[in-house]
Image (cartoon, rainbow, N blue to C red; front, side, top):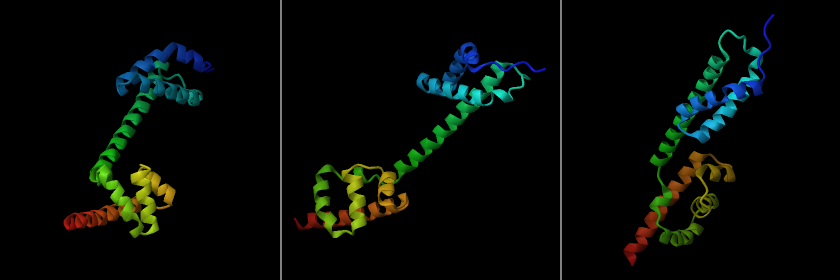
Length: 165
């Protein structure tokens, strides 16, 4: 006859500090470790019936903690790569000083409605490209292309006006 599995509160009281310390070791942040600790115990609760007692409870919890923290670190690494890719793309706002925004507003009427909406949402409302895409019902790559085309044409027009001054 198998022994009754330990209850969650009992597990937390007995091993919570160990799980927390291990999570801090992996994640380097107490705040993140607190969140991870809660998630580890939720996972433990869900798989408590599957715990057969073939290893120590602490070993089982360490394995769950390790796997969870490694998944968080992988996710963090993926997010960092995505952010780096975004930074490598054209940073439209950095290319347009504040004083030119008024000039750009004057240029907007000469562009199609979708371009006007995308430019206004991105530059004036300071929405992210993903938010602009969602608001307009188009893809992020399409937003990027619309903004790139606008910036290219706006720069040409602004440079042309500067030559005529």
